[in-house]
Image (tube, rainbow, N blue to C red; front, side, top):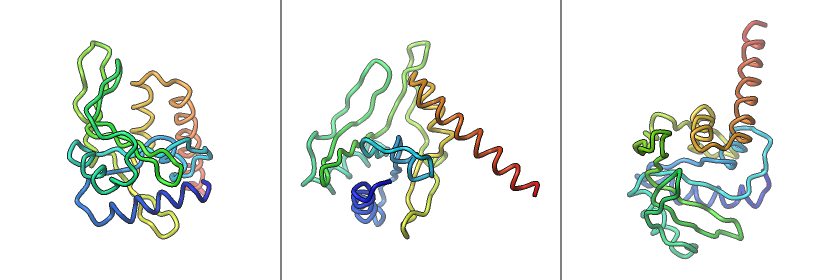
Length: 165
């Protein structure tokens, strides 16, 4: 991951790590932080409803789109955007996905899918790649889901072969 992204991640981490906000990086930024060789196009932060508005308050000088409840055909959340050092940061609180039967799945239990990864001395919260895979399948984003599935299968076979040696 390039140094500009790491610098913005460090700013976010420093400001949020001493708060009660339940948050985690998600999307391509999370993939890169977990070792997948991808270049993020933005930084996505997943949180709950209160967390979205608190992140907006903490980063008020960077807000380019105020946090508001918004919805598309497939996903809804308390959504806002920041621009930090030229990098777009999306805030998503209480994400809900529309299921195939047209009903909305309740907000994800982040505590269930959050883990921590060590990067440059920071203990960074990310959503597990298994959760990310399921989320991309539900959104119908096949290319990303397939990439994650291949990565997960590859890392599972690597750990199985290293376990047996």
